[in-house]
Length: 344
Ligand code: NAD
Ligand code: ZN
Ligand code: ZN
Image (cartoon, rainbow, N blue to C red; front, side, top):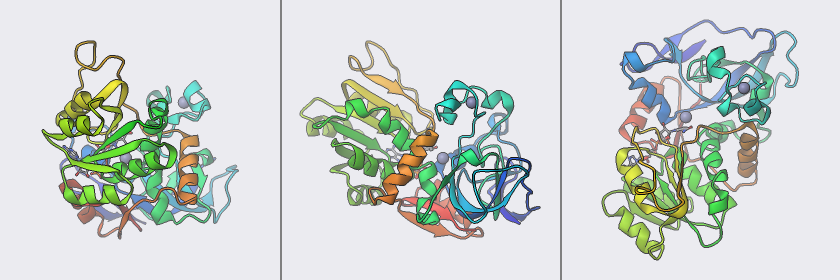
């Protein structure tokens, strides 16, 4: 089969021919219908050798959807021909976190060597994908795989961050979304769908701000030195009850810290490497800071249901597997709008 692989530290990804994998006992083989590109892929491909821990060669793609194609011995719960989305943050299935469906916070995964597809295990940017357990599949039903594949990360990650902030997002509150890219443009829609907060979006790029308005942001602000004053002005000086930072750079964390209201919450989702000093003299009284990772199995089901009733929609640019390397270059340069999706 053909696969898009990251093969050498510092190189660009390549399309290669590799053996089609066979599903082992309890496993499921999918014929991939769509695989999304995430900025985290760019991040790991930018790591120096001493920090790179994902194995080489690595078939990319941690957002996957496919048709169940073959079942390993004893696999039950899905049938050949089912259209499914892949829940990516695989856990052990047995610890307390996994029992709650929060496999993204599995306490055993690291010790057991369990890694998500595309972030250690072979990923979805290929003709076929092996999924370790049918519990990591959610039926898509009538949802279009290309339009919904990114809900497995660009949907469920913001959803998880927003759900953990719901107590702050009361009527009359303000939510700030920093970075209206793949995750951010879905975050704006989730905020509009499940809260009555006023949504302010920040980005550096006018095109991304136009997309933010199109998907429901009440106000947009160019990210930069004047952003905090603009957020304070828009909130009568109070600040935002919740700030979702989908960049996580020092400059955006500084904005988040200065723009959050007393007793508000900052969710650091972007992995831009900034540090947010938290404490009595650096954050407003009562403000909380969280750095969430991905989302739970039930949250993926909920996000797909939001899409099913038309409340959220991923803006997709399609690419073939051969166009994958060029698509990653676009993501790296910041010229991708919405989410890039590879259709093998
Ligand atoms: P993306 O490239 O699609 O979007 C990033 C957006 O941020 C772009 O619109 C860009 O113009 C904007 N931006 C860049 N610098 C900015 C600044 N200084 N101020 C305001 N906006 C700025 O990326 P994505 O795939 O949506 O991922 C967003 C971030 O979330 C990445 O850091 C990614 O690695 C991370 N991520 C984290 C998790 C998690 O579980 N915590 C999951 C998925 C992605
Ligand atoms: Zn991701
Ligand atoms: Zn576990």
